[in-house]
Every structure is written in C-alpha cells, then in structure tokens.
Amino acid sequence: MAGQLPLIQMLLLHDYFKLSELEVDEAAWDTVLAKYQIDAVLWVKAHEQLRRFLVGKRGWKEEYSGLYETLYVKP
Image (spheres, rainbow, N blue to C red):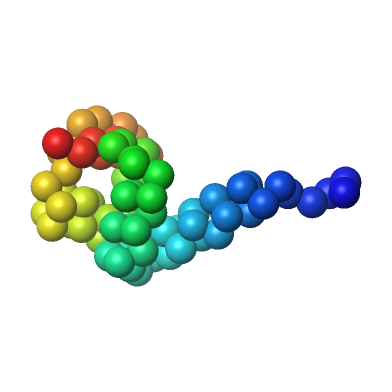
C-alpha cells in the first residue's frame, strides 16, 4: 500500500527509536549493536552519556570528533 513502510524498515526504525533517547538504555544498545553487527556509530557529539557507555563501558574507540558529530568504532 502506498504510504506504508515495508516491515523491515518499520523494525529498523523501531530499533533506532530505542537508541535515540537522551538516557542510554544499555540493554537496548547492546541488543541493537549485536543484532545488526554494528562496528561503528556516528552520533551527535553532545551526547556525553553515549560516549561514556561506548568508550568507558564497552571499550570502543572515539575515532573522529567533529564540530557536531563523533564517530565511535568497535575495537
């Protein structure tokens, strides 16, 4: 039907919305990172809580930091 997203896109958006909260839901992040085998995350630089989670708790590396964005990579 016109105007409707295919199921895979709906599921992907559902997962994305779990991650887009200000508060980092560690279980949700771990689940989505594993589910999609994500090894790099490009996110808003101002999200310090995400940096503490990925770098401090999961051992990821801050590969690049621009004016507004940060790229984290899995070791």
